[in-house]
Amino acid sequence: MSDNTKNIIYKRIPLIWLSFLFFLLFEPIFDHNLTFAKTMSLGEVLHQVEQNAPILKAAQANAKMFKAKRSVVRSKFLGEIDAFAHDLHYNDDRLTRPMSPPINMSALTYDDNQIGYGLSAQLPLDINGHIRYNFHALSHQANAAQEDAYNVRLNLLHSAAKIYRGLEQVTGQREALQKQAEALTGHINVATTAIKIGRIAPVEKLRLVAELKNVEGHLAELDGVEATLRAQLASLMNVSSFTDSIPTMVEKPQLLQTSPDKLKNRPDLKAAKERKDATHAGVIAAKVTYLPEFFATANWQQNQGYNGSGQDDATWQVMIKARLPLWNGGRRRAEIGQAKAQNQAARYKLLALQEKARAEFVASQSKWNAGQAQYEAAKSALAASEEMTRIQTDRFNEGRLSAADLVDAEATLERARSGLTTSLVKWWQADDAMRQTIGLPPAAYLNNQTKK
Image (spheres, rainbow, N blue to C red):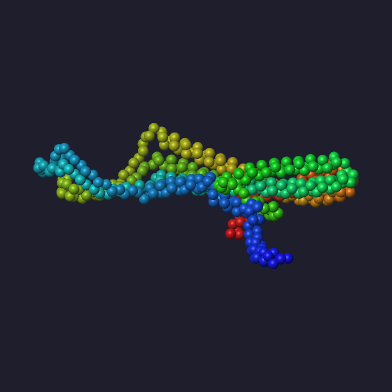
């Protein structure tokens, strides 16, 4: 080796070590970029949906609107105080002529220009309770709007969970198909060797290749299903796209110890009850319109100009006013009838919703038990399929089994693997449905909240 060659090698050694160090430092980043950005759990997805979903923000804004309406009615209890100013101009001299003896015929003229300012106050005396019952009605409506917002949130979380479960099912089915494709590829290689030595006919290999293409078609179909589910989930999360990977399902749901008594925690039932109470208060508010109304008013005025009492005189007035409605064309009677009808409708809606909730709760328990049984059956079926496929593979490798029989065994194994994932997804969906019937979010939401 010449001296020039040695110098070149020695000069390149630091560069080689530097390149090796660079690879060690940045290799995880390269790996990371080759896959999805990150893996997002269901709990993380649900919390992001809760924070960003426009429909939930709209429901929360609606609840705030009813709270503001309630505050408007509550302010009526405190009355009103106004400041005023006036400028009066007369085109004749006004006279004061006392009519009781002794009669004084002297003219006491007013200034033809009267300028004044002061304060005016009015306080309703809610003796008949009209304001009070209107306030109660709006309070119940505000509570109902808040429960509606909670119900929108609950349905939104369960809708997102259902889509996410669909992605988990697609992930499991893809893994099963990929394993089937890998197995078929291995069988094709074995068949290629067996054909060369004349142990099997070329048609056997063609049967394996055809099944492999069929599996690849199913994988492409799953890509379309996954793209649709990801678009739906991105819409709920209010993001442009959802590209995070979905972890493989391994955990099984735990039975939730509950009873029908917890149905009262459902936000839709709470909202229906609040609406019934609101319509009941509305009936009373309509009835009390037949009773008198009372108001207390007070005025203080500072005059700028002679008004018969003196120059720049200040006057004040306090008055209690009663108003008894006598006739308004039957409007009050119609309003009472309308309020009673609304109350009756609200009561029947509440009863119907309660019956529906009880039926959903019973059905969810049955689905949960069925989901557990289906999962255990799927586990047994997978174990049997794996053993059968192992035996059939050995027989094919020994030349004692046709490719058609081997394809059938691999297809059965793929269905068993997909069936296990599907049964676990359905079991989790049944668990989510049971929680929704008693007003609880999915278990993943609560678990993620506990970790935080």
